[in-house]
Image 1: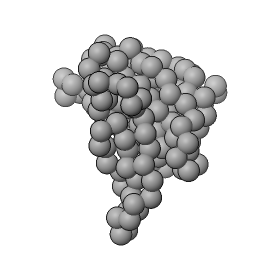
Image 2 (image 1 turned 180 degrees about the vertical axis):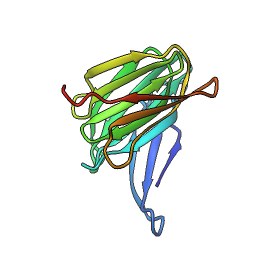
Image 3 (image 1 turned 90 degrees about the horizontal axis):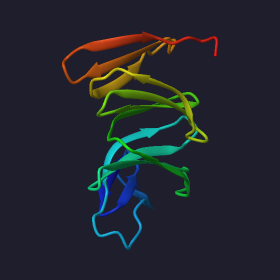
Image 4 (image 1 turned 60 degrees about the vertical axis):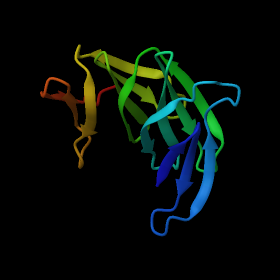
Length: 149
């Protein structure tokens, strides 16, 4: 269980709500504190979340289960949806870009422009063979995942 407070992500246990650790994701000199927007956990224990700053820029942060910041990348657009599947992070943006990034490096693997704000991302539960995108105009877009790459 996580909550955001003044540039920090506070981690608690799910069962009893005990405090585990605090993740600092904002420099102390920053006047406007970023807002935590999306959060995902990997099966490896990575904590990945996006923040939105008033200067119209998103950042994607990756922390270890021990609370160490492993990576932080800047995104020029607002990250509106984020999930982790296996070794990939899938991110949707307000301008309609779906980005698939490598989990460990957060380097771009693939991008797809759907030209409408992505509100939610999900994948087929049993096989991860399809990506489902819920978009702002109410449509559900379904993409087949090519497993040859």
